[in-house]
Image (cartoon, rainbow, N blue to C red; front, side, top):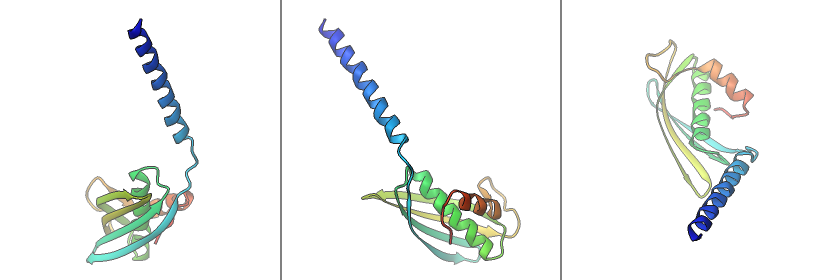
Length: 131
């Protein structure tokens, strides 16, 4: 009988945690974009440091950095960017991203290439600020 009570409590606890996760995912996404810092490292190599609050996860911070890279490429007269790396961390609700991209006029080799014009349009549609 005691084993049955423990199993019942586990089932109830599992159900409650599922409700909590579902409620969190239903929360509105209201990010606050806190800024972009751009550094030209060498020729076509560019670093972007971004900050935001209200990110759902690392993906939101990476999207912010990609938008910065896309707009930066367009400003410089290039049509493409290639993602090299992004480091994301969160402290006290402030999310920071440190990303490095190469920019180029022609489609660069690699799997993580970005058509700057297409990416910039998507960023504008999604309300993500750019450089």
